[in-house]
Amino acid sequence: MNAIAQAPVTPGFEAYPLPGSACEGTFDIPGEFALHHGGTLTAVRVGWRMVGPEHAPVVCALGGISASRRVCLTEKPRESWWQEVAGPGRPLDTERFRVLSFDFLGGSGETSGPAPGETFPSVSTYDQAEVLLRLIDHLGVRSLRAIAGGSYGGMVALAFAERYPERVARLIVLCATDRPHPLGTAWRSVQRDIVRLGIESGRAREALALARALAMSTYRTGEEFQARFEGLPVLDEGRFRLPVERYLHARGEDYALRNRPEAFLCLSESIDLHRVDAARICVPTAAVAVREDMLVPLTDVRGMVARLHSARLHEISSIYGHDAFLKESQQLHGVFAAALDSH
View 1 (cartoon, rainbow, N blue to C red):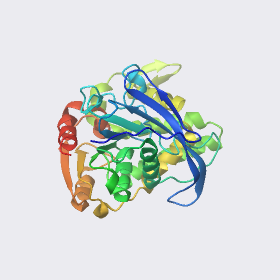
View 2: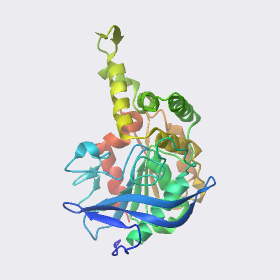
View 3: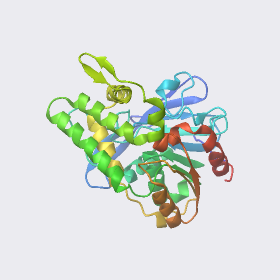
View 4: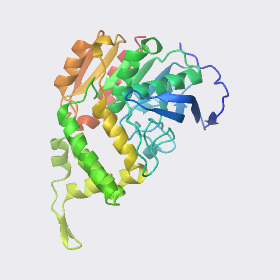
């Protein structure tokens, strides 16, 4: 069983106890932080959160580029990103495991990232893996029971397992592979160009909302859109607005309120720079592929599983497509149980 030692008090370390079994805080990585793609950062600060019984095995949960350290919040569920999967009695049970997460480097959270108008160095999934290593060292976690990563978080999980296999017993990789698919890269590159154009023209937030709206159309499936948005257009302020258009714009505007355009550029690029050597990953891995996922095709996940040393493929179908890792609690329950209970 993993144990959490008392975190050492170091300069820049802050920890805040929260109601129940949760705590969160920040700590500073001392000295220079060398980046995989070149360059260094100084005074890197990391924002983290843990929830679950104090001496329970630790599972790190990581999500997409818009995810934060707030994996599940019983008091404010709308502010967390994995409420359907993590929590009491959920597939990632916070009554049995201590769930750890952190804000991604280069993102919009408490971890160091680009300030408004600032160009941030390119960030690799290997850099995120090193941030996680520094974090568990700081918290005194000798070994993680598992890393459960969806989308970008799954990429980070693979990078961590390649570099630091002795520090994690299992991987649960959902809707992610060892390299991005060119079609997904095509969609994301257009989104980044929209945001860059918005920054250059002084309309960065509007551009980020538009890029996110485009992204939303790639996360789900045509079947879901057909079921939800076949309604008639509505005349609004002299122009027709379609049901799907209103939905996409609402999601885009909500995203732009919570995220910085520069952080989106950094982490979106990080997805497309992602490359790990699956043949070097020996950590037992449960890989989940969604047949309807347009961003991470089933054939790509099958190929990765063939290259991994010890992996089991779980194929599921979902109307939610790529977002199935966020939604399909029932289908994922058996995957999590098999992976976490086989330690």
